Length: 171
Image 1 (cartoon, rainbow, N blue to C red):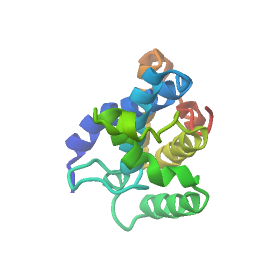
Image 2: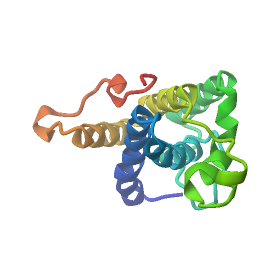
Image 3: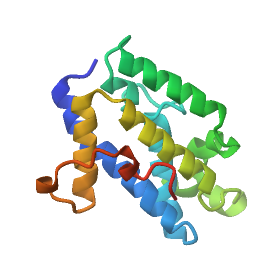
Image 4: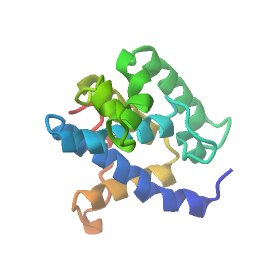
């Protein structure tokens, strides 16, 4: 179980990766967009618990108290969304290695990886919005404030209380 200070320190890293994923999607027609999108999609899918990761990876569940109402809401929403997940989602982890994270000859000899998927991006961003919406208030506020900071909105404006501001589902 992570401490509150560890969770607070993780917020900027998680929000940054989600923003990079969204921005990389805008450049999916360029190879540079792929290079950013694939690792971020892999990170997001592990964090949002739709793909296996390593033991020390950050997970959405770390931000919830096991067994409480927020955790139950997150679990139920995530499980429901997974029923509607695009088939390409299951390939993201392996494709990240082939497309961007590992410079191997497979990029030349077996170039099966294509541009980032619109459907996968939309799914991940929607699940990201679901995650933030389900969070306990103290962490929800931290994520929304960080999202505002990343978008150049000042603290004097206060956090955007609308989770839609996270960009979930909009690509």
